[in-house]
Image 1: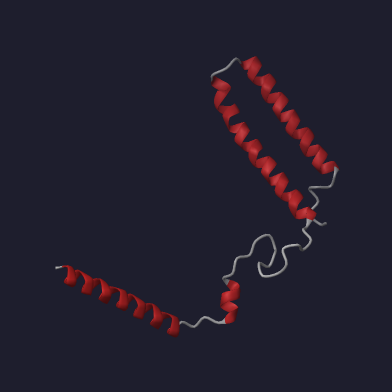
Image 2: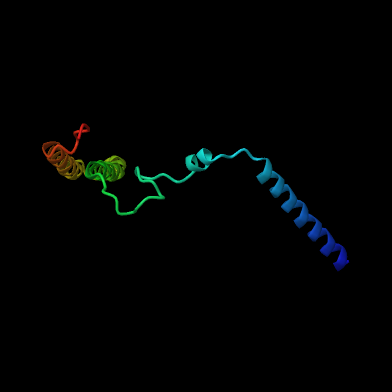
Length: 118
């Protein structure tokens, strides 16, 4: 029984290796395809130096996106708590939060962080 199981596992391993070898031989991958499938992140080539200069404008846009993403995550619960709390308290906290967001947006606009042409 064990020898039969051993023979079947050896045959399965040989068959799978044979199929993989045939696949590698018959595939039509070229160097361009390998380059195309390589990881590409933030405009950097992964095979070049890691100490290349980084675009500050790209970084600022990313930070602004994260800030707006967190703002949305904080505004949704405010809408849900509207029915559960006192209207005056809810309006004060919502007004304070929205004013802080608008002041931050004005500061970003004043510093030309929202200008996409740089």
